[in-house]
Amino acid sequence: MSANQPPVIDRDSGAPGRGPEHAKIALGRIVAWKAAGGWIGSMVSLLRAVDAVLLRVPSLEDGVAFYRDQLGHEVIWRTATMLGLRMAADGAELVLSVDTGPETDLLVESVDEAVEFWVRGGGTVLSAPADIPVGRVAVVSDPFGNKLTLVDLSKGTFETDAQANVTGIIPGAQPTD
Image 1 (cartoon, rainbow, N blue to C red):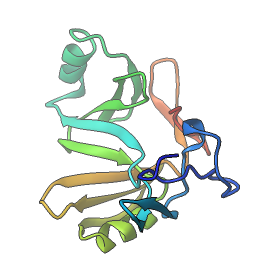
Image 2: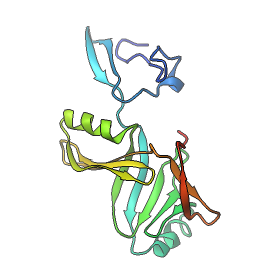
Image 3: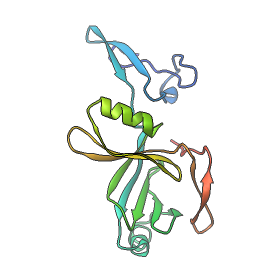
């Protein structure tokens, strides 16, 4: 560990980890490390990953005709008003919607805790935390006016049938990192 990087903490035990594979830090863990001649306290990575990029389309059929048929993205789930497409190897999704968007969805451990840190850091809440089928969601703005959507998957992930229609929720399932 260098003087200007935080120690890696194992999320389950709180003990020093063995490397980057153990770097999934529990939300809000405060660490201190020696940097530039002094100790600095800092929160470690509130935002885990891009969960989805959501785009508005005139109809799901039009969206599928372009994003699946022309660009090759696989349909992985579908509801009456939204459709998820596999976008990248890291688990991010391209979500097409007939009634909302565009937006960037960022994955966090807990939306409620993330909102507290967001506000404490100088951001604002545009839409308070609310339940969604797979977890919780909130819309926030950073101090520069950028609107972002925070999502947690605390209830699980979508279960689908052979045609990618959402049939339920797989409790506790998390996307692979």
